[in-house]
Length: 460
Ligand SMILES: *[C@@H]1O[C@H](CO)[C@@H](O)[C@H](O)[C@H]1NC(C)=O
Ligand SMILES: *[C@@H]1O[C@H](CO)[C@@H](O)[C@H](O)[C@H]1NC(C)=O
Ligand SMILES: *[C@@H]1O[C@H](CO)[C@@H](O)[C@H](O)[C@H]1NC(C)=O
Ligand SMILES: *[C@@H]1O[C@H](CO)[C@@H](O)[C@H](O)[C@H]1NC(C)=O
Image 1 (tube, rainbow, N blue to C red):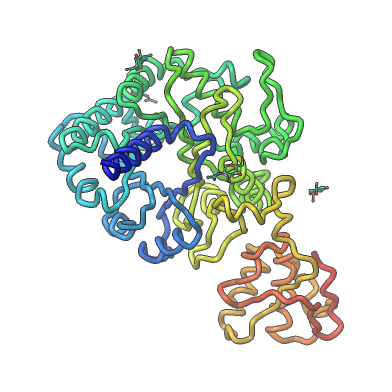
Image 2: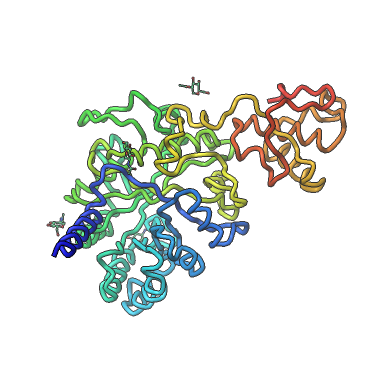
């Protein structure tokens, strides 16, 4: 009897814990695993990287078989996606979603820990305008999950872009765009409410900051505004723009009578590089945003409007993706380069956070006193030359001193010139760990390099 009692108790504890996962005070961090690139590691290698970083949640943009297989048995929670191009079929055919769920979910679940399906992505801003198919597609996917008896564990939702809001400031005045309300928002919220699911939203304070640097302070965007911004309607104080954006979504849902639906931020991030007009894109700011956000989410507490609903967010993105179209920032949201080097260092777990002191200044933790970056001769001339060309070109290093006749031209060797350029690049990028690598062509040293009369303390 006793053992039965214990079994019963632990079962009860387990089920009530998982059901109440939302009411835990600490939030969670996941990562978007985008693959619009031709130079990424194979999925099995990527999964090793995720595990080595302590990542417990990942979101995909499709239901790729190799990826889902690689994630099998890891315990990592997975959000699988149905691409926008399949919404019409999904909306109009129950047998389509039955087959889709069979081959993309049931073929892997539960060994692959799929916890949600993102039906479409930012559908309202899709140029193909598949908006009218969205909610019917969600209903059909859900009905298929019911058929295979997994509807209680796998949630169905759809990431919306923040542009679905017509008004987002102040947060308490958040509202959806009027033309979307009857067409799709109300039916979607009813579906989410009925099925115990949550709304998914992609939110980028970077865009808001870039569009209005006069009004929005960088500190506020990067979670380091001690004073905060007060919502004049209710006196609530916001310490970060992301929380203000989240509360605008909560307020917009509340306006339509839905006060119980939770929000998961399915994408947020900050680019480490951008075009000239993309103000704020830098490795320091990206490190500050993502690092401070991780700290904010994992150490608990909700938003001012929803203090009991902690921040559950997915960072965008795992890798820099070299085939994404658009401005430079688009290809530079990654936490990692394709060679798995970190673009900048941030904690991803509560343990890693303990050694991180970036709350005020994002790059602080990575900047070690007195380091320089020099060329690695063993990389070979070809690699060194390529890296030198990159550093002096796109990389923006100051290479004037190594031009003929200038102070660091002598000694006229590839190693000396590359060292000068790499060091300039490294310092320009605040000596972040990823900025002294060049695919193995460079490494960090703790003594100032000596090449002729060249002074390595100038030029950056
Ligand atoms: C998209 O489709 C819906 C209904 O099918 C329509 O009401 C809306 O105007 C369309 N939006 C655009 C931008 O074409
Ligand atoms: C949300 O669902 C609950 C429980 O099913 C229901 O009582 C409530 O009326 C729903 N809310 C709205 C706004 O439809
Ligand atoms: C939750 O956050 C607190 C700080 O607010 C931290 O001390 C604790 O370790 C966190 N718990 C977990 C399980 O991450
Ligand atoms: C953070 O960095 C900025 C710019 O480098 C500097 O002006 C500021 O004093 C630093 N703040 C703290 C608290 O270290």
